[in-house]
Amino acid sequence: MLRIIILMLLVLSPVFAGAEIQVISLRTSTPPVVDGDSSDAVWRQARPVLINDKTSGETIILTSVYTDSDIYFLVQYPDKAENPLHKPWMWDQTAKAYLEGPHREDTFVFKWNMLDTDVDLSVFSDDDYRADVWYWKANRSNPAGYADDKMHILSSTADGRVDKTLNKTEVDQSTALLSVSGHQRYLIRVADQGNPAYSTFRPDAKGAPVLDQYPSATPSGSRADVRAKGSWQGGFWFVEFSRKLTTGHDDDVQFDPPRPALFGVSIFSLYGNKLDVQSPNLYGMGRISTPLRLIFSP
Image 1: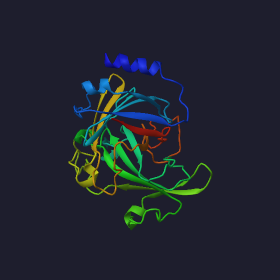
Image 2 (image 1 turned 45 degrees about the vertical axis):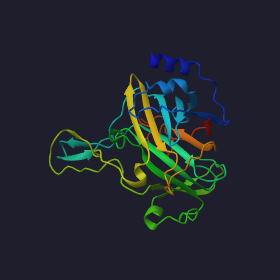
Image 3 (image 1 turned 120 degrees about the horizontal axis):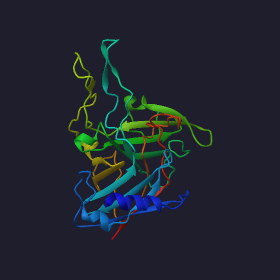
Image 4 (image 1 turned 90 degrees about the vertical axis):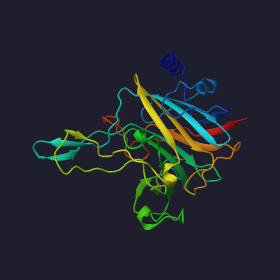
């Protein structure tokens, strides 16, 4: 039944324009369970919003509710095939060794403006900004029930002077990009403080033909702020997110209802990679959506 409703929404999807879209978050006393099951009654009470993914052209259905302490989101979007592996180790008989496989995991990204003024959250923006990024990964975060919590800092300087808190290690992660107007820009991707929801594994002896390079782990610190769990059913991803309205961490956006919040979303990771529609996987080629404004409904 739910899939029929989703298909109806996609068929009735309006023409998408560049204007800002409001996402109304419904106040509730009965929050959903973040388990990738979209059947919680509260989701049927909230108002879904249709958003165009600029890279794939697919329609994202986004719904939100909040309580006195937490914010919740349900993301639904079509995906013909589930991709739950990321760079797995694959045994190569000729090389007599494990080599990284071509698989790339399915993802979904929330990107939140952390400044007091509105900015263009694209990685090709002319604006300097600092953004909170919630990065759900089908392989590296979903098994543990989290999204990877990170920051994007876009600056006109490679040393990241837009943000004085950066250390040398973080600055080394900058990527040179050109803005929409042709200016040199630098994207710095920084992980929040703490440990991720995965570990890294490298086999030292032959075992199964395919081995997971990123076994699940328990995240810690600010990197464990965002809960997220997805399930792939019949050609659709259903992903639920939750986070405290206020975390107290400097590397997070802080929500203060009824104050609105500016953000954007993407099915694919926002690395600024050149868009190649002929690629078998669009991983890393994400483009930020039309600007979204989270509105807290009383």
